[in-house]
Image (tube, rainbow, N blue to C red; front, side):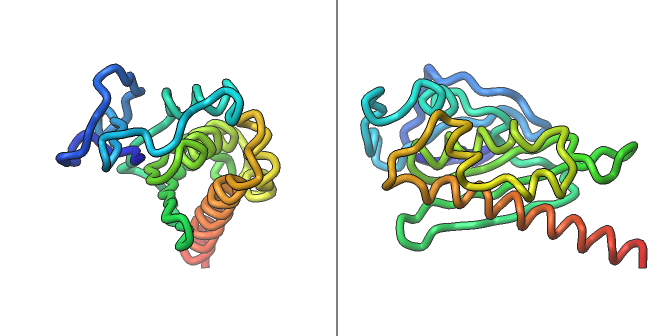
Length: 173
């Protein structure tokens, strides 16, 4: 599964019943490369919160005016996450907006979505301090085999915050 910006053209299957929020780049969409759900979204495996974040991801899409971004991937499973952060000009240490593009399993997309909601309003330090357990808890828990999805979210947030801090330090110095 991939979260794709609307300008991306693909022969991939796109479920028409999906409804996504708008960003500057337009409306994001959900695509599955093989035309079939790779894994079942069973409530016996995943929480209702995780299923909701997967089916209705928040803040999906690229952010054209991002102050920082990070790309992380898991070479074992192939999941990837590109995270975008915009900091508040009035309070430059505080995250104003966050968005993401993700490719991976439902748990990966859901934790990416939850991460964007969790970091908004936090300082960079507060956001970077969030752990994989925090992201897993935000989606109602993850099966042990899917903990790596919360690791991706935590790593992307930390890397994006570090990139922003390095950028602002260079600008100041």
